[in-house]
Image 1 (cartoon, rainbow, N blue to C red):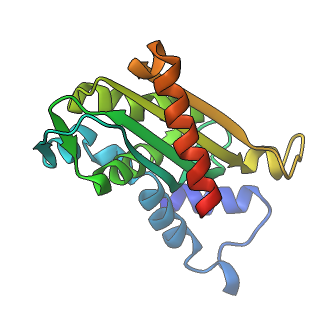
Image 2: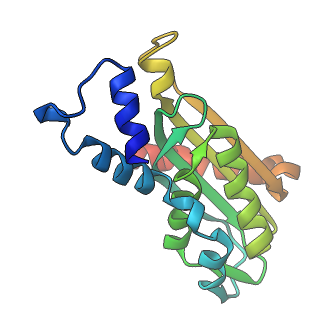
Length: 185
């Protein structure tokens, strides 16, 4: 990878041997390997190792989870907050594992829509709740730095499954809990 990065620097009109760029190919490789480290991890294993049988039948919401990802179209960052809620059916998962799941999927080349549905689908298939909701609010550097250059734009995506899709009341409870969480942070 370092050879490719060095060639890219030359193509951009730079001298990879100048003082400020010495070591850049190695640093870029390390950065890209870290930013895409989610490919080597299995999200289901993270959740399966933290499932607990609990008699709890009210909503679990983890909100304002910071994430960073890389847009697969321009390989530029997008970042924001992810909100996850689920209604347990005999099992709950360790709360930190939800943040870990988001981290695994966000550390892949992504589009926000796929990221949202991957998180919801994995929770649905692994925990088997009565329903799950995922909302992501993100700012995309590809829109801010290039193209339309809209600095204050934000994209919001959602994936509602099970009772979160079928029941307006459940969905509204989730949305209100998120809204209240924003107010308190």
